[in-house]
Length: 277
Image (cartoon, rainbow, N blue to C red):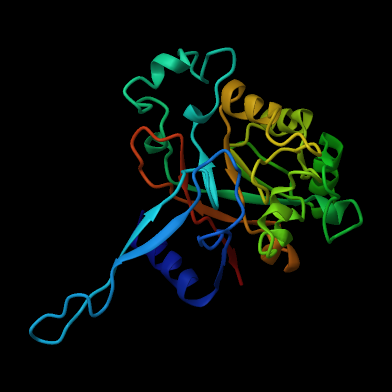
């Protein structure tokens, strides 16, 4: 990178970029998949517990959580099918010792890529959101792509808005979880459509990316199999997409850096969508 290109980048940062936070606030009681340990935050040391001779005091925290809670990314170690992971390795053997050395979250490289938001409800004529349990088809994805004029390219990160994210802050976390109602999401065929575009990663505003049938929960996740096991495409879940959708932002610089959790099956993330003036 030359001095001129560096200066151009700095000028853009200082004078013309808008940064949209696509991550969810991590808080006790937030909705999540019931398959993962919940988020918990505590203050084991509070101001006043220990006061130094100069009058100073400090507080510190402790958190516990599953790596698939809040906005997070799935590592390739997360899902297996017929006992095999994406590289063909034996899934049980790969996790010996309580960690996935080859396909853990520490192997996910930071992402600075073209991002595309496919706003499916807007393309279907109902900007509020897809109905509970609605299955997003390849035709729906293609309709959003065409309507927005944002063709999906190889290497992109594609974020699929169902509109379900508007329920994340409902006082009852089970509303967002959709245990009885189902949750809208991408179908198996839709996952194949995305993988055929040779995207690097996909994401959604739900906890499972794909459609959850009413009353079925996480009993069947074929889109996860297609993306994580068969095609090697990362999945990002529980994204906050309402803000960029409301502003009509469909194309952006996508920035994401997972925590380098050695051997983990996923990582909390705070993705950013960066757009010019």
